[in-house]
Image (cartoon, rainbow, N blue to C red):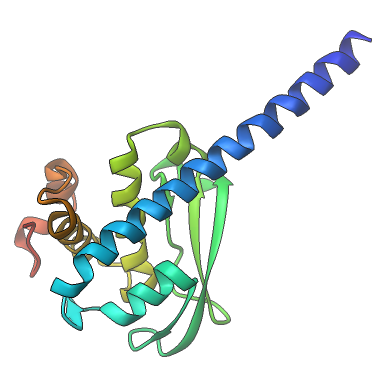
Length: 174
């Protein structure tokens, strides 16, 4: 009987935790969309090599036409992941796209660690990879610029910026 009670308790706990993770991911997307929509009028048609229309469509619709990858693509959101990429990142985008799909993997720690602002920044950052490729410096510069335009400031990312060699890149933080 104790084993059955423990199994049921574990099942109920996992079911209760899943909506919280889903809510954190949805909130981060909503926050990222709100920030992007506020910044969009000041971004032009491209910023840091990111096609603004494609970025908007990928972020808000989950599908976009890519000049970078070529063709129409869909974003496949994978939440609650714990795979090998999750050892280093809270979220990541395995590239290149396959069969018209770009996965956006959101790891468990995305919902369990950090602040709402950091989760918003992470979504803004990862969506650059979805639309414009693997360049970490481009993704961080773009995400920081969106934050700055939307809120008047951006999340400090100096350690990440320097560890990726971005100081010597073609991109800069606001």
